[in-house]
Structure formats: C-alpha cells, structure tokens
Image 1: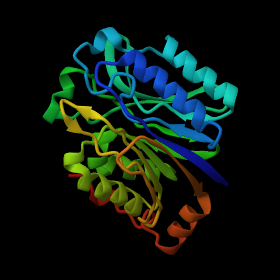
Image 2: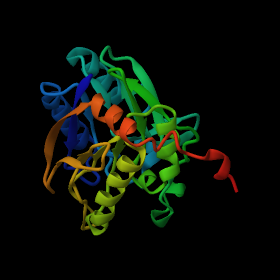
Image 3: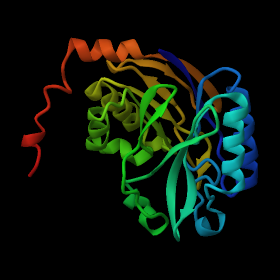
Length: 261
C-alpha cells in the first residue's frame, strides 16, 4: 500500500504563538488536499522561544489539539502534529501527538533525548517510552530532532516492525551536514523510510536549515526541500521496504545477546 506524506516545512517565528498556530493550521488545510498523512516540524506553535513554556504549553484537551483533531476528521487525513510543548500531570514535555483519519488520537510521543547543550532538561521532562503508531496501515516510529543522534532508539523500533520513521525537527543550518547524514543513516541501517520535517526561520539570528527530506530504505534521498517555506508531497511505497529487507537481512542478522554490556 502506498501513502502520500506532506512534509510541512513551515516558517516558525519567535514569540509569535498565535500567529504560528494560525499559520500552521492554514498549511495543514492546504496540505490535506494533496496527501494522506500530514507532518509539521518541532515546537511549531512556540518556536524555540521557550522561556514561558509552562504558561503556553498545550494540553490534549485544549483548543489547539481540538482544532487538529477536527481537521483530521473533517479532511480524512492522518496528522502527526510535529511537536508541541504539552503539559501533563504537572510536567511539560516536547510532545508529538498523532491523529488518525477519523480524528481519533492514536498516540503521543514525548521526546526521550533532551538536548543538554541548550539545557532542554531545564524546560522539558524527558519522555520514557517509544511510540510505533499505526497510521493508514503503516507502522510509523516517532523521533524528535536530537533523537536522530541515538541509533539504538530507531533500531529497536525497526525490530518492533516500524517501516517508516517520522522525525519533526528544528535543526540549525550550522549543523546541516549532520542532518542529511543522520537521516540517511537511520534509513539505510534500518531499511526503512525516514521522513524528516524541519522548519525554516531563525532563533536568536541563527537560521534553521530547512531541507526537509524523505529518504528511502536503501538510503537514497527521494525528495528534499530547500531553505524556504514549502510543502513537500512524497508517495511512499511499502514494497520498497519489503524489497530492501529481502535483499539484505540486516534485521534478522542482529545479535542482541551481544549488545548488553
């Protein structure tokens, strides 16, 4: 079964929450006319300006979540809502909610690896569990930005049946080469698609990289955006995953018994 993904490479503005939300919802409406599963970038509602994160954090029963759920049901699309600062049980997480075509909440992924270089641990609580969500019959593993640097997370999800990984990000241009390298590596080593959705714009005058991309299970870049706002539409074919895994039995040849220290 093939599925069309819309990678929404959105211009995210600092300290412009209401504007970002309205703009993101408008881009989703546009993308819903062209694709089956829509993906936004990391912290698209707030941008990386997170000084007031507790005051602006969303909740799953809040207004933004309700609008996303309604849009999914109305347009009959899956939505992977990038990530948002979300409050739960007195903690704030960098959280990626996933809605199905009927508007049902399929699951949430809370970013496991927090970026200590920017002291994210002072802003967010770390997630404690992986998520492999079934969207349009595809098994999709979730990661967020810095998670890309931790291959063990993706390998475990591949072993659990993930055929595709979706990674929303706010990845800086200063480390753009790393973005391409890591997205390709996570794809080829797991023989799975990787859908990397970055943003554009700036944080404290440092530009984000853009270059959202889809990489196939053989490591080939199938589509790549530039460094301006755009919606990238790409069709994924499950047969490519099956073919790659038949040709080289990487997952079957694993030796988990030898990996424990």
